[in-house]
Image (cartoon, rainbow, N blue to C red; front, side, top):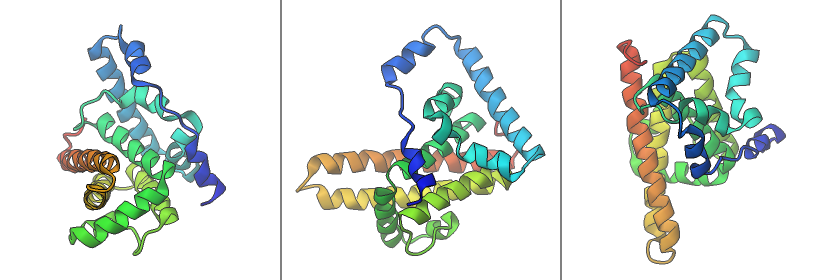
Length: 212
């Protein structure tokens, strides 16, 4: 892995109780308004100036500023909304960059067990190693800012489905010998499946100009 990729290990998520205290006195309507406004303004601004430098700053945003900064803007937004979609894209990026080896293991297992078009839609090479998956998730995020947003969301959704299938399969392998690991992988599979559904729905809403 390159030195640039290792930089993504730096962000540390704030504990949930501290995050909740931070927002305890906030008006939920105001938090929602700010989340939607910032997501819409960000996407519009980048599309007006899709220069390489601007896009790369956004792709590497969490490496420099941490996931907390993004969380404070978008993490409480509805799943099927523009800020909710961007939040899930950044979480996927963080997941891959923090543990690309596990991601590669799950993706390869999912690719061989799912037997669907999802691996083609996601666009990963075959086989996809850790470095290839790090590159893939960054390409998907670049596409969200610079290309067809719906296509980027559909690629991310397909990626999640492959990963979820892999996590389920590996969890089954460890069910008897390592039940704790199996439980963790099963929870990951469920979370990824939910993300896939959310991102796919967001892609459809974007095409109907209804994603806000």
